[in-house]
Length: 223
Ligand code: DX5
Ligand code: ZN
Image 1 (cartoon, helix red, strand yellow):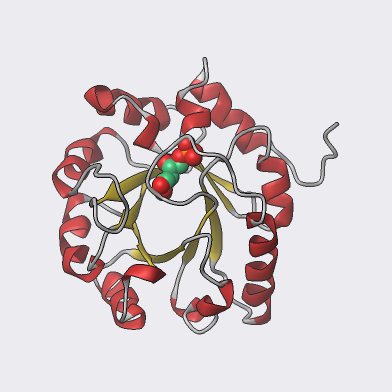
Image 2 (cartoon, protein in one colour):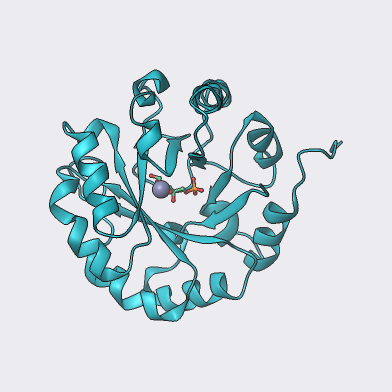
């Protein structure tokens, strides 16, 4: 499968969110990554269902909503109504992960589980058959524009081995510090989806940066 690109609107100018969504809509991006933070699970607050619902009409692309909130089970229906296609919840925020993952699917969305840099990827083994995506954090969640944590590459390889052993189709999405400088290495390690916030929105030509991320080929050797 050709890898997917999911620009994160966290790095957009929030006063012009609709323009950011339209820019992504006109690009080669596959998904739009939406970061929801509550000031409790992570030390920052971003947006919630009303904002997701407001920007939803500007594109038909997949809305990939990453919940960095406590008690995610309470908000499943609200995000479904707001237009989320994929809903990812943190393994660290959820005592009843299996139940919550199935509630996400019963609400008609694809289910993702996000995992922080300190959490052993083996903890995902028994939930893999139930989920569509693992959102592998390659920074500590809370802000855009942070530096990619190099050990993530080992974690991607470990997770890929678990997924292959389970004969599962779960996608590995890598989130944080991804750009044209390291994306090729990340893909080679086994990533299927690249989230990119700062590297897209702070570039001089965001659509061109998205295209560069999309056109990478793991079979090509780059100098
Ligand atoms: C971090 C968020 C990321 C963030 C990535 O807490 O989950 O999705 O937007 O941004 P960059 O690509 O700037 O690291
Ligand atoms: Zn994210």
